[in-house]
Image (cartoon, rainbow, N blue to C red; front, side, top):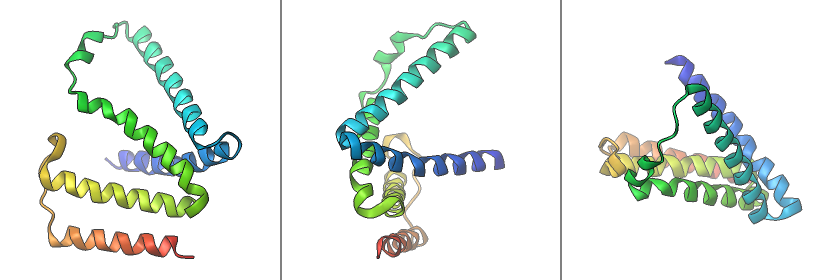
Length: 148
């Protein structure tokens, strides 16, 4: 279990680099083009990874399963594009620490709402007073990070 914690920690560290790199690219190309380039490169790498995996696993991809997926689950790509574009645009205004602390706080608040109502098949976990205090402390922390 500890190995997954450290993997998640590493992913978080890498994630802190992504918007700063995209914002640097945006200085030359603009936020929309920088976001497009970022998604294009990521998409190409994923397509190559899927092709290599299915080549070595010797199992063809079953395209028929795509028609059985709940359409709401295809929104992940659109949300990802909005996140990359938003972060690329906001980094020059708030800095990496401000944007990432606000984004993570937003994620945790939405996660609490998802848990409370059991949205999208998530298990229901009631929003209790301790979780609410945690959210309030996160909001205070974000303001301390953003404050100049």
